[in-house]
Image 1 (cartoon, rainbow, N blue to C red):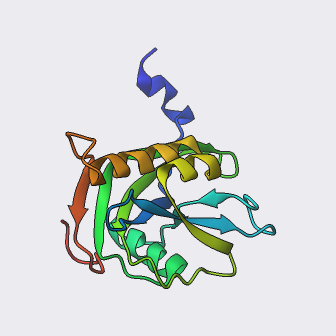
Image 2: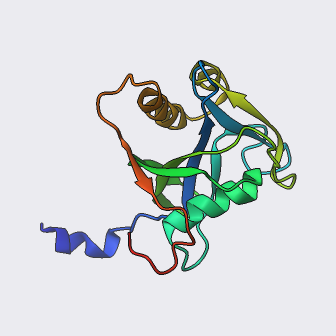
Length: 172
C-alpha cells in the first residue's frame, strides 16, 4: 500500500500553543528561569511551568511568544530567541499530536505581574532548581539548552535571535 491509501486516516499535527522561557542572568551567577505555578482550579493544577499559552487566530508565532510573555509576566522581552527545537506531545482533548514552538527571552527580574486567573505564584529558578520543580522533562531540556549557551558551555547555539515587534507584516 502507498501513503495515498492511508490519506483518509492521516491526522494533521496541531500548532496551537507556544512555550517561552524567560530568563535573567545575575552578575556572576548562573542564569535564572522564571517559573509560574498554575492555580489549583485550572487544567494542570499546581504545576510549575514556563510561560505557555495559545496562539490567537491568525497570529504569527513570533507575536504569540511576545504576547504570552507580556500577558503572563507584565513585561516586554528585552531579547527574544527561537530555539532550534519544538515540543511534541499527544493532546487527547483534540485527539492530535501537538507541535509547540519554543523560544527564550531575556526580561528584567522585577516586577513580575502574574495573571491571577491562571497562576498563584512565580519564582526565579536555577536550572537545578527547575529540574526539581518542573513537571515536563522537555521544558527542563529547553532550559538546559538556553543555560548552556548563556554560560558558554555549548559550542553551538540552538538560539536564533528574533525581532521584537508585532510580527504582523514582516516575514523575518
